[in-house]
Amino acid sequence: MPYVTPCPSCQLAMQLADDAAGKPFRCPACKTIFVAPPPPVKVASAAAAAPPVRQGAAGAASPPPPRSGASAAPKPPAASVASAPPATAQSAALTSGTPSALKSPAPSSGPPKHCPACGSPWLADAVSCMDCGYLLPTEQTVESEEAVVVCINPACGAANPTGQRYCSRCTTVLPTAAGTVLHGRYKIKKLLAMGGFGAVYQAEDLKHPGSDVAIKDMICPEASEYAIRLNFFRREAEILRSLASTPIVPRLIDLIEQDKTAQLIMEFIPGQDLMKIQEANGHKPFAFDQVVEWGKAICEVLQRMHMQTPPLVHRDLKPENIMLRPDGRSIALIDFGTARDLGRTAKEQMKAKTRVYTEGYAPPEQIIGKPEPRSDLFALAGTLYQLLTGKEPEGTFTGKEIEALLAQPNALPAEQRWLYELIRINLAEDVHDRYHSAAEVKRDLERRTVTREVDCPQCGARNLVREPYCRQCAAPLTAETPPCHHCGQINRMGSRFCIYCGNRMR
Image (cartoon, rainbow, N blue to C red; front, side, top):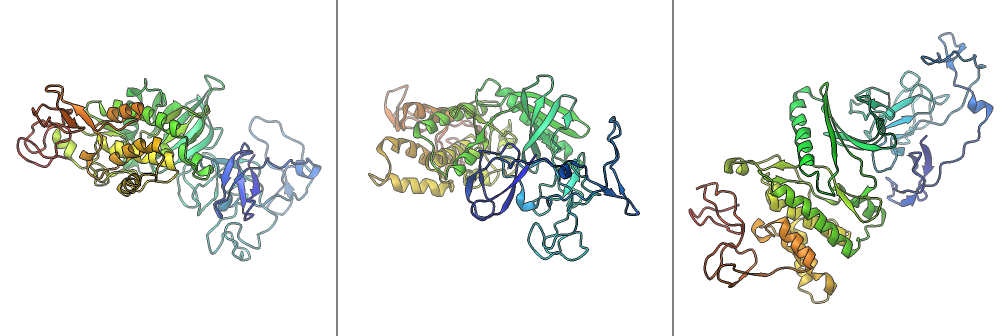
């Protein structure tokens, strides 16, 4: 059962999950981070043990009807049972996910004097607050001691019967109630996260007792959007299958399509994402060596995605999408829902894509809808910067700040300067100034250095790294580019202009 505890700083009442004891939380009002205390011990009493009493039309006490399949219980004596006030929108659980089905207490014996949500005076005979619109649960909407689903809209917070898809008050999509069994096999435990496209749950696989899975459930309020969102789910399933041999990618178990809904069944990754861990620790940087190892593991995933035909780009690499496993060392890269291929033809590759990005981690070309593999390297650099410093990146401005620090001899630790230089290069505004591939980034992370020159394989002359052609014999030094969108000729990575027609290369 959820329990209520006050913030130790501002005394705001917060409702926490029953397993929250000992975990760090942040107060939504004063932002104080504290460790949740254990739930209070309840002392059983005859009055508390008595079932709630309903009033009939004539005011006479009548017991609730027995549940289906259960024998009729003896009639309890007519008595009035006091109960705690309903949970407010401000007391939503502050766990790693959004609260799902809760057991709501019975309504109080009379209307409150002040709104439980905003504190405004409560008008006599009112059923909702005139200021914030908070709706008091009633016997018509909340059966005492029965499971309910609380609306996740912070401005609503209304309790809804289990099995209802949309909030009866604000029409927000509701999470699936805990205890629901999907497809006769997966029993929902709790909601982990919920967004505009889908909700992610932790569930038990009843065919393998004790084994948990993650279920990504498609949210589609409009029937006209079903086909579009289903394609996103199918594409994510295909990407997960193609990356099945990569250790840090969750394993796909199944994709189930049924009755205008779809669910991705995936390996459950216990732990927290790196963003939440840093926030809980006061934005403390992670260990330098650990950040380097994580960077190499992420590069392996990106390289496999970028080498596919057509290339795949993740488009949303950031600390929030990296889970730290319980061993405290290994990670898992999650949420491939925004990943997409760049197209097979030059025309498809040049066509603007849906603008999907997170500010601070996305390069200019992705912001205008034209991402490419080196766009993921920009996001990787921003992610490494945040893990290394505890500060969120600000796109190319962060690259310029690092450049200014590198110009000062003692501004950065000497043994870490190479990694800051690698981050600066990949935060470049011009895509041609970044590393050409995740494989190059991984190689320098392994060597713990920044490669600056390479030898021409044909004449042996020294050239600056990432120069497309040898300055002495003109032999190609880098990988091939996609065809020029103007003349269709193949050039070399790093070429800013087509050597055949002079057109500006992307």
